[in-house]
Image (cartoon, rainbow, N blue to C red; front, side):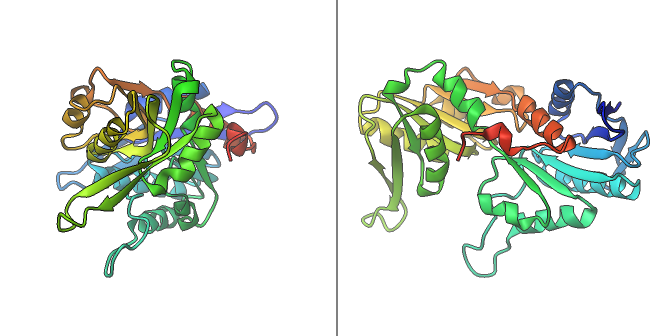
Length: 325
Protein backbone atom coordinates (compact mmCIF):
# COMPACT_ATOMS: atom_id res chain seq x y z
CA UNK A 1 0.00 0.00 0.00
CA UNK A 2 2.97 2.33 0.38
CA UNK A 3 6.22 3.26 -1.28
CA UNK A 4 9.31 3.71 0.90
CA UNK A 5 12.67 5.01 -0.28
CA UNK A 6 15.85 3.16 0.64
CA UNK A 7 17.33 6.20 2.37
CA UNK A 8 14.43 7.40 4.48
CA UNK A 9 11.19 6.41 6.10
CA UNK A 10 9.09 8.78 4.03
CA UNK A 11 5.88 7.12 2.96
CA UNK A 12 4.25 7.76 -0.42
CA UNK A 13 0.53 7.16 -0.63
CA UNK A 14 -1.59 7.49 -3.75
CA UNK A 15 -5.28 8.09 -3.20
CA UNK A 16 -8.11 8.81 -5.56
CA UNK A 17 -11.80 9.35 -5.94
CA UNK A 18 -14.54 7.84 -8.03
CA UNK A 19 -14.34 10.16 -11.04
CA UNK A 20 -11.76 8.21 -13.01
CA UNK A 21 -10.60 4.97 -11.34
CA UNK A 22 -8.95 3.71 -14.55
CA UNK A 23 -6.41 6.54 -14.58
CA UNK A 24 -5.79 6.12 -10.84
CA UNK A 25 -5.01 2.44 -11.38
CA UNK A 26 -2.75 3.19 -14.34
CA UNK A 27 -0.75 5.83 -12.43
CA UNK A 28 -0.43 3.46 -9.45
CA UNK A 29 0.86 0.71 -11.76
CA UNK A 30 3.47 3.07 -13.25
CA UNK A 31 4.67 4.04 -9.76
CA UNK A 32 4.67 0.43 -8.58
CA UNK A 33 2.24 0.77 -5.69
CA UNK A 34 -1.43 0.13 -4.95
CA UNK A 35 -3.87 3.00 -4.38
CA UNK A 36 -4.69 3.38 -0.70
CA UNK A 37 -8.07 1.79 0.11
CA UNK A 38 -10.93 4.13 0.79
CA UNK A 39 -14.67 4.07 1.20
CA UNK A 40 -16.51 6.75 -0.75
CA UNK A 41 -20.27 6.96 -1.12
CA UNK A 42 -23.20 9.37 -1.36
CA UNK A 43 -25.89 9.93 1.22
CA UNK A 44 -29.48 9.95 0.03
CA UNK A 45 -29.45 13.75 -0.28
CA UNK A 46 -26.29 13.75 -2.41
CA UNK A 47 -23.73 14.57 0.28
CA UNK A 48 -20.41 12.79 -0.17
CA UNK A 49 -18.74 10.70 2.51
CA UNK A 50 -15.04 9.79 2.43
CA UNK A 51 -13.14 7.48 4.77
CA UNK A 52 -9.63 6.18 4.19
CA UNK A 53 -9.25 2.61 5.41
CA UNK A 54 -5.65 2.74 6.58
CA UNK A 55 -3.52 5.26 8.46
CA UNK A 56 -2.24 8.25 6.51
CA UNK A 57 -0.44 9.85 9.47
CA UNK A 58 2.88 11.36 8.42
CA UNK A 59 2.57 10.25 4.80
CA UNK A 60 3.30 12.15 1.59
CA UNK A 61 -0.17 11.97 0.10
CA UNK A 62 -0.97 12.41 -3.59
CA UNK A 63 -4.70 12.60 -4.10
CA UNK A 64 -5.75 12.20 -7.73
CA UNK A 65 -9.04 13.23 -9.27
CA UNK A 66 -9.66 14.46 -12.80
CA UNK A 67 -12.51 16.96 -12.94
CA UNK A 68 -14.73 15.28 -15.48
CA UNK A 69 -18.52 15.48 -15.74
CA UNK A 70 -20.43 15.90 -13.47
CA UNK A 71 -17.65 18.34 -12.67
CA UNK A 72 -19.08 19.94 -9.53
CA UNK A 73 -19.60 16.57 -7.84
CA UNK A 74 -16.04 15.44 -8.48
CA UNK A 75 -14.46 18.72 -7.42
CA UNK A 76 -16.41 18.52 -4.17
CA UNK A 77 -15.31 14.92 -3.62
CA UNK A 78 -11.72 15.97 -4.28
CA UNK A 79 -11.98 18.72 -1.67
CA UNK A 80 -13.47 16.34 0.89
CA UNK A 81 -10.64 13.85 0.32
CA UNK A 82 -8.09 16.59 0.96
CA UNK A 83 -9.91 17.62 4.14
CA UNK A 84 -9.99 14.01 5.36
CA UNK A 85 -6.24 13.67 4.76
CA UNK A 86 -5.50 16.91 6.59
CA UNK A 87 -7.56 15.91 9.61
CA UNK A 88 -5.88 12.48 9.62
CA UNK A 89 -2.43 14.13 9.93
CA UNK A 90 -0.98 13.51 6.47
CA UNK A 91 2.38 15.29 6.42
CA UNK A 92 2.04 16.76 2.93
CA UNK A 93 -0.92 16.73 0.57
CA UNK A 94 -0.50 17.14 -3.18
CA UNK A 95 -3.64 17.60 -5.25
CA UNK A 96 -3.16 15.84 -8.59
CA UNK A 97 -5.72 17.06 -11.08
CA UNK A 98 -4.93 16.03 -14.67
CA UNK A 99 -7.81 18.24 -15.82
CA UNK A 100 -8.28 21.29 -13.57
CA UNK A 101 -11.96 22.25 -13.38
CA UNK A 102 -13.05 25.81 -14.24
CA UNK A 103 -9.63 26.57 -15.80
CA UNK A 104 -11.31 28.45 -18.66
CA UNK A 105 -12.73 30.95 -16.17
CA UNK A 106 -9.33 32.44 -15.39
CA UNK A 107 -10.17 36.13 -15.87
CA UNK A 108 -13.05 38.56 -16.05
CA UNK A 109 -14.13 39.18 -19.61
CA UNK A 110 -16.89 41.55 -18.57
CA UNK A 111 -18.25 43.20 -15.46
CA UNK A 112 -19.91 41.19 -12.69
CA UNK A 113 -18.21 37.92 -13.70
CA UNK A 114 -16.34 35.54 -11.36
CA UNK A 115 -12.79 34.27 -11.65
CA UNK A 116 -13.79 30.71 -10.92
CA UNK A 117 -10.35 29.16 -11.51
CA UNK A 118 -9.04 31.27 -8.61
CA UNK A 119 -11.97 30.19 -6.45
CA UNK A 120 -11.23 26.49 -7.08
CA UNK A 121 -7.55 27.01 -6.20
CA UNK A 122 -8.55 28.82 -2.99
CA UNK A 123 -10.90 26.00 -2.05
CA UNK A 124 -8.11 23.43 -2.30
CA UNK A 125 -5.82 25.61 -0.20
CA UNK A 126 -8.55 26.01 2.42
CA UNK A 127 -9.19 22.25 2.45
CA UNK A 128 -5.54 21.69 3.34
CA UNK A 129 -3.62 21.10 0.10
CA UNK A 130 0.09 21.93 0.25
CA UNK A 131 0.85 21.45 -3.44
CA UNK A 132 -0.97 21.31 -6.76
CA UNK A 133 -0.13 19.23 -9.84
CA UNK A 134 -1.99 19.70 -13.12
CA UNK A 135 -1.57 18.95 -16.82
CA UNK A 136 -1.70 21.72 -19.41
CA UNK A 137 -3.62 24.40 -17.57
CA UNK A 138 -5.73 26.56 -19.87
CA UNK A 139 -3.48 29.52 -19.09
CA UNK A 140 -0.18 29.65 -17.22
CA UNK A 141 -1.42 32.42 -14.91
CA UNK A 142 -3.56 29.87 -13.02
CA UNK A 143 -0.34 28.72 -11.34
CA UNK A 144 -0.37 32.03 -9.46
CA UNK A 145 -3.86 31.41 -8.08
CA UNK A 146 -2.60 28.74 -5.68
CA UNK A 147 -0.55 29.92 -2.70
CA UNK A 148 2.00 27.11 -2.80
CA UNK A 149 4.06 25.05 -5.24
CA UNK A 150 2.37 24.19 -8.54
CA UNK A 151 3.74 21.48 -10.81
CA UNK A 152 2.55 22.33 -14.31
CA UNK A 153 2.97 19.25 -16.51
CA UNK A 154 2.95 19.33 -20.30
CA UNK A 155 1.62 16.66 -22.63
CA UNK A 156 3.58 18.13 -25.53
CA UNK A 157 6.35 15.47 -25.52
CA UNK A 158 3.79 12.65 -25.59
CA UNK A 159 1.70 14.17 -28.39
CA UNK A 160 4.55 15.59 -30.48
CA UNK A 161 6.72 12.48 -30.33
CA UNK A 162 3.80 10.30 -31.38
CA UNK A 163 3.17 12.48 -34.45
CA UNK A 164 6.86 12.90 -35.27
CA UNK A 165 7.21 9.11 -35.46
CA UNK A 166 4.53 8.79 -38.13
CA UNK A 167 4.91 12.00 -40.18
CA UNK A 168 7.58 13.53 -42.38
CA UNK A 169 8.23 16.66 -40.31
CA UNK A 170 9.80 18.36 -43.35
CA UNK A 171 6.27 18.72 -44.70
CA UNK A 172 4.57 19.64 -41.42
CA UNK A 173 3.34 23.03 -40.21
CA UNK A 174 2.19 23.48 -36.62
CA UNK A 175 -0.89 25.70 -36.44
CA UNK A 176 -2.19 27.79 -33.55
CA UNK A 177 -6.00 27.97 -33.76
CA UNK A 178 -5.96 31.43 -32.14
CA UNK A 179 -3.52 33.98 -30.74
CA UNK A 180 -3.79 32.54 -27.24
CA UNK A 181 -2.18 29.25 -28.32
CA UNK A 182 0.84 30.77 -30.08
CA UNK A 183 3.26 30.32 -27.16
CA UNK A 184 2.35 26.64 -26.78
CA UNK A 185 2.67 26.07 -30.52
CA UNK A 186 6.11 27.68 -30.50
CA UNK A 187 7.20 24.92 -28.11
CA UNK A 188 5.91 22.39 -30.62
CA UNK A 189 7.88 23.99 -33.46
CA UNK A 190 11.02 24.02 -31.29
CA UNK A 191 10.63 20.30 -30.62
CA UNK A 192 9.71 19.25 -34.17
CA UNK A 193 11.73 21.82 -36.12
CA UNK A 194 8.71 22.88 -38.15
CA UNK A 195 7.29 26.28 -39.20
CA UNK A 196 4.39 27.92 -37.39
CA UNK A 197 1.12 29.23 -38.77
CA UNK A 198 -1.57 31.15 -36.92
CA UNK A 199 -5.30 31.35 -37.52
CA UNK A 200 -6.58 34.83 -36.84
CA UNK A 201 -10.29 35.03 -36.04
CA UNK A 202 -12.18 38.24 -36.61
CA UNK A 203 -15.82 39.15 -36.97
CA UNK A 204 -17.17 39.70 -40.45
CA UNK A 205 -18.32 43.34 -40.58
CA UNK A 206 -20.84 42.48 -43.28
CA UNK A 207 -22.78 39.93 -41.19
CA UNK A 208 -23.72 41.98 -38.13
CA UNK A 209 -20.96 40.61 -35.90
CA UNK A 210 -22.35 37.10 -36.04
CA UNK A 211 -19.91 35.21 -38.26
CA UNK A 212 -16.18 34.89 -37.71
CA UNK A 213 -13.72 35.03 -40.57
CA UNK A 214 -10.68 32.77 -40.23
CA UNK A 215 -7.51 34.24 -41.71
CA UNK A 216 -4.46 31.98 -41.97
CA UNK A 217 -1.07 33.58 -41.42
CA UNK A 218 1.77 31.29 -42.50
CA UNK A 219 2.62 28.67 -45.09
CA UNK A 220 0.14 25.79 -45.10
CA UNK A 221 -0.43 25.03 -48.80
CA UNK A 222 0.52 21.48 -49.71
CA UNK A 223 1.54 20.68 -46.12
CA UNK A 224 0.34 18.49 -43.27
CA UNK A 225 -1.00 20.84 -40.61
CA UNK A 226 -1.09 19.95 -36.91
CA UNK A 227 -3.75 22.03 -35.16
CA UNK A 228 -2.71 22.28 -31.51
CA UNK A 229 -5.00 23.22 -28.62
CA UNK A 230 -5.21 22.49 -24.90
CA UNK A 231 -8.67 20.92 -25.16
CA UNK A 232 -11.37 19.88 -27.58
CA UNK A 233 -14.81 20.57 -26.17
CA UNK A 234 -17.59 20.64 -28.77
CA UNK A 235 -15.11 20.49 -31.63
CA UNK A 236 -16.77 23.42 -33.43
CA UNK A 237 -13.78 25.77 -33.29
CA UNK A 238 -11.18 23.23 -34.36
CA UNK A 239 -13.25 21.91 -37.27
CA UNK A 240 -13.84 25.44 -38.56
CA UNK A 241 -10.12 26.11 -38.22
CA UNK A 242 -9.43 22.95 -40.23
CA UNK A 243 -11.80 24.16 -42.96
CA UNK A 244 -9.86 27.43 -43.13
CA UNK A 245 -6.61 25.49 -43.56
CA UNK A 246 -8.04 23.39 -46.38
CA UNK A 247 -9.27 26.57 -48.09
CA UNK A 248 -5.65 27.73 -48.05
CA UNK A 249 -4.47 24.54 -49.71
CA UNK A 250 -3.51 22.33 -46.75
CA UNK A 251 -3.02 18.74 -47.84
CA UNK A 252 -3.92 17.15 -44.50
CA UNK A 253 -5.03 18.35 -41.06
CA UNK A 254 -4.45 16.57 -37.76
CA UNK A 255 -5.86 17.88 -34.47
CA UNK A 256 -3.80 17.43 -31.29
CA UNK A 257 -5.01 18.38 -27.83
CA UNK A 258 -4.29 17.36 -24.26
CA UNK A 259 -7.83 17.22 -22.91
CA UNK A 260 -10.68 15.46 -24.70
CA UNK A 261 -13.75 17.06 -23.15
CA UNK A 262 -15.83 15.98 -26.17
CA UNK A 263 -19.14 17.40 -25.03
CA UNK A 264 -22.30 18.04 -26.99
CA UNK A 265 -21.98 17.28 -30.68
CA UNK A 266 -18.20 16.92 -30.55
CA UNK A 267 -18.05 13.34 -31.84
CA UNK A 268 -20.29 14.09 -34.83
CA UNK A 269 -18.45 17.33 -35.55
CA UNK A 270 -15.08 15.57 -35.61
CA UNK A 271 -16.26 12.42 -37.44
CA UNK A 272 -17.87 14.48 -40.19
CA UNK A 273 -14.95 16.90 -40.56
CA UNK A 274 -12.03 16.68 -42.99
CA UNK A 275 -9.61 16.24 -40.08
CA UNK A 276 -7.80 12.95 -40.67
CA UNK A 277 -6.86 12.18 -37.05
CA UNK A 278 -7.66 13.54 -33.61
CA UNK A 279 -4.94 12.87 -31.04
CA UNK A 280 -5.61 13.45 -27.34
CA UNK A 281 -4.45 12.09 -23.98
CA UNK A 282 -6.47 10.30 -21.32
CA UNK A 283 -6.50 13.12 -18.78
CA UNK A 284 -10.29 12.70 -18.98
CA UNK A 285 -12.22 9.44 -19.42
CA UNK A 286 -13.36 8.78 -22.98
CA UNK A 287 -16.56 6.71 -22.83
CA UNK A 288 -17.19 4.07 -25.46
CA UNK A 289 -19.83 6.18 -27.18
CA UNK A 290 -17.31 9.02 -27.63
CA UNK A 291 -14.73 6.84 -29.36
CA UNK A 292 -14.47 6.85 -33.16
CA UNK A 293 -12.09 5.67 -35.86
CA UNK A 294 -10.21 8.98 -36.20
CA UNK A 295 -9.55 9.21 -32.47
CA UNK A 296 -6.19 8.27 -30.93
CA UNK A 297 -5.85 8.37 -27.13
CA UNK A 298 -2.36 8.43 -25.59
CA UNK A 299 -1.70 7.68 -21.93
CA UNK A 300 -0.75 10.53 -19.59
CA UNK A 301 -0.19 8.11 -16.67
CA UNK A 302 3.59 7.61 -17.10
CA UNK A 303 4.15 11.37 -17.05
CA UNK A 304 2.05 11.84 -13.90
CA UNK A 305 3.80 8.90 -12.22
CA UNK A 306 7.24 10.33 -13.00
CA UNK A 307 6.21 13.73 -11.67
CA UNK A 308 4.89 12.18 -8.45
CA UNK A 309 8.15 10.31 -7.97
CA UNK A 310 10.17 13.49 -8.53
CA UNK A 311 8.12 15.41 -5.96
CA UNK A 312 8.26 12.57 -3.44
CA UNK A 313 12.03 12.22 -3.80
CA UNK A 314 12.58 16.01 -3.71
CA UNK A 315 13.74 15.91 -7.32
CA UNK A 316 13.02 18.27 -10.18
CA UNK A 317 9.75 18.15 -12.06
CA UNK A 318 11.22 20.67 -14.50
CA UNK A 319 13.81 18.06 -15.48
CA UNK A 320 10.99 16.08 -17.12
CA UNK A 321 10.75 18.84 -19.70
CA UNK A 322 14.38 19.76 -20.25
CA UNK A 323 14.65 21.34 -23.63
CA UNK A 324 11.15 22.85 -23.34
CA UNK A 325 11.17 26.62 -22.99
